[in-house]
Image 1 (tube, rainbow, N blue to C red):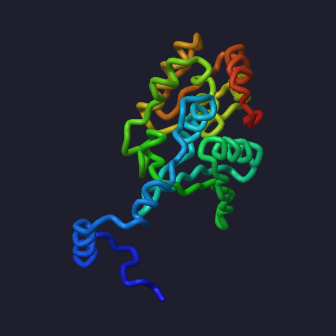
Image 2: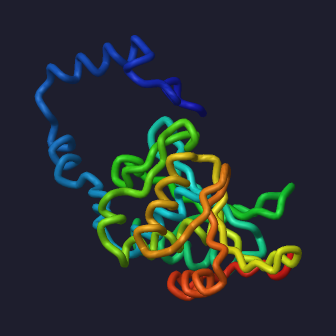
Image 3: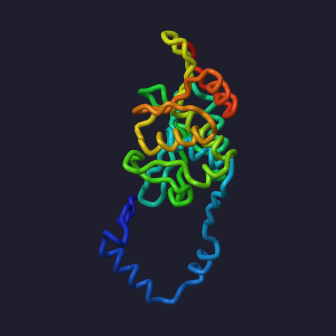
Length: 229
């Protein structure tokens, strides 16, 4: 039997509001005291290489959805990228102390990793909902630490990045593609500060100097080589 108050809260239901106000005036029970002592304490997300890489991954192919009583993180992968999926699976477990679930989409070559947990957006300092409704940037704590920035760029490029040889122009290229101007600007400036010579275009930031491409690929341990196009 479905309970009468399923999906309702005191903010939208007068009966629950009345019950809540009545209970406020009563003496706290022993069970209430036990609840306060045994509340679930969610693991604090400390600055680390794992967190920096995961933040980059979220900026690329992740999102946070706010639900009625919790929040949901989803990260999407091309089905061919099982090594990357496994790698991020392990990062999520280390960060949130919880194994993510895997969903294989029926109508596309896409797999999702997802977890449910409270206060994910607040703890990760990452916006809920449609990402392009927000000004996306690499956090200052990442940009101020070269090792953290390296890991964040790895997360970014291994989600929305591509490495290929342009046969027509005989050019070796690695690029990050996205529709967020603020994020593309941030990546462009970060690469300049690291000594690279990026090209900022409308929807991507790219490196096209052969020696810089190989240096960057090696530095972030990039794994998505697309070949000759």
